[in-house]
Length: 132
Image 1 (spheres, rainbow, N blue to C red):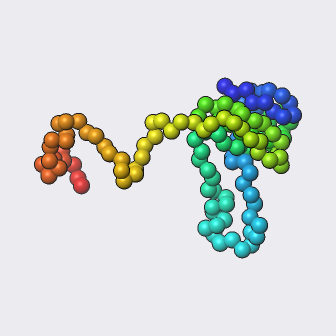
Image 2: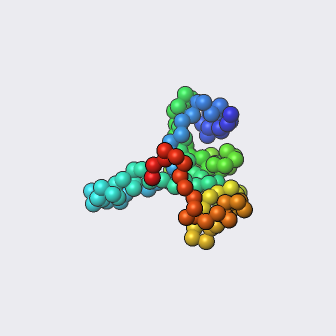
Image 3: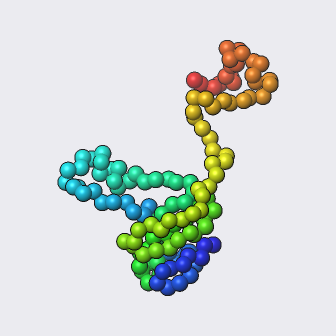
């Protein structure tokens, strides 16, 4: 369980807080000029960072105040907690390693066992009763 340091109340159990999404999302300058796609991007599209990420939180069962927090999404390490409206503090913690991630790049290869690679693709048949 996380121990979240509320800037108003001090360290409290994570069950007292609610996540509020990505921090520092700027409101559009001219909202009346946005088309439906641009509104959808503003409302629903957010970064999905692996590593250090700025988030909004509310201390819902305590002081009921919103605040920002910089947290590592892999290790759950809280790096900074600061008031709403304040700029994001610089953190010197490197982003998490990209180990174990999948890729669909053109240069990626899939290695099957020796038995599978020696069987020509044209001789592989579907099991009985299978549909295409």
